[in-house]
Length: 289
Image 1: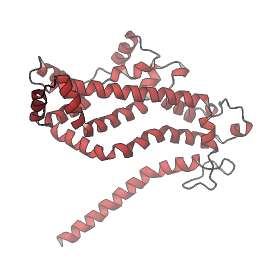
Image 2: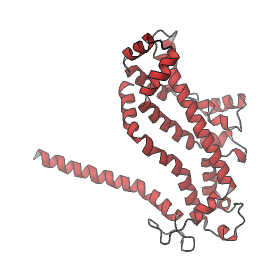
Image 3: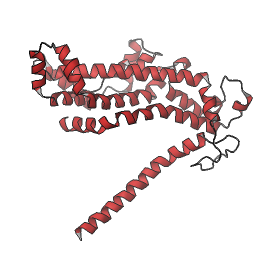
Image 4: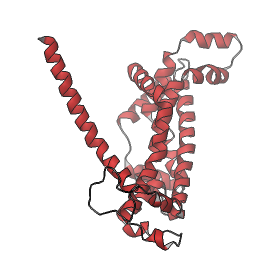
């Protein structure tokens, strides 16, 4: 009797989970389907889950526009540079606060935890970026967010979990603190590094609000700002520089959807490569944190 109730509950959970998953995935399929639909057969306000006639014309068009290429380059720079600096600052700071002999260690940990619970808000951050002379610069999207409290605590928990004997052995063999950090700590923290790299990279790739308030030059526009301009202003999709009459006759909706897919695709392609580290990294960090 008990097993039947459990089985029924499991089935109900599977059904609810499947339904929620379907609701979440359906809009994505619609976007991909519209983007791959031949412009000659596209009908506005029609539900597309599978293209009636396949075509990559919208992708060819959007990839030929200079605005998209420039925005993608800006976003790629912010993502790669920002993520590399995030990992560097997060793990050097986390390694430092794991050392009990570090002066004022408790004070630094208190500041980290305090900033985890409270933040200054938008206006102080805006004034800080302005006073630093970072307005209208891509560095405004990188330097103010070099690390964050949550990532620091996760990285610290990972390093704390490593056996102290490893560091002792390395020091007996002549390793300095820097040598121990690069030869022992970082190689053993690959799971947490992969997890935090994914979080930082997704955050930088999807940066929208900061780019909106800090960047005023259209030449510094990021991909998310470009997608916003494509979705909000239909005329932007026809502002290509290809000069092709056929391309300019493309329905704006297929071009918009192709732009959205291209904005999502690179960061989605990263997931399979870090998936094996993802669960381990998140769970260990949460348990020790």
